[in-house]
Image (cartoon, rainbow, N blue to C red):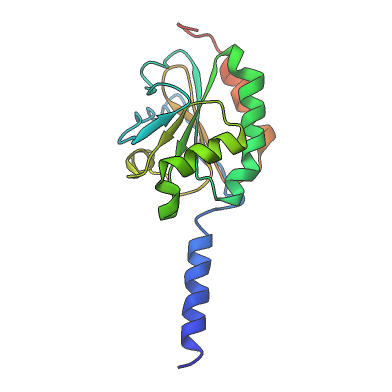
Length: 185
């Protein structure tokens, strides 16, 4: 019995740590003409927007949108951040819009002033939605931090990646989408 408590504690820690996946695979079944990509859900239940007014995917039609689910104390999210920053800096003039969806893993990550401090500390300049109630998280069927969803000009999720890595593949998809004609740019 004395060994059971440490074993249960270790198991609980492993389960908790698995929420931040270092390198989960991208979507294994890309859309095809016979099975179009799903429409991206709108942002729901957002408690607060940082770095600008509330955003809507409907208003962003004609743009390529990178929706990034993250939380500020997840090391994997922190490791992905320089890549997201670089894409934002390199491609925002060409029509890429980055939207951060901060969905907390822990209670202290729900506090507005903590998220504001993290956004400032990390130098995040794109809009950040605070999804404390997990409504947008659930709308996307998301399960991981970090998670990247690329939404095309028609509002469809055409690429997703969970965890760290595959930065070149993600950037290739961004470039491919930006090269596609759009009704509104």
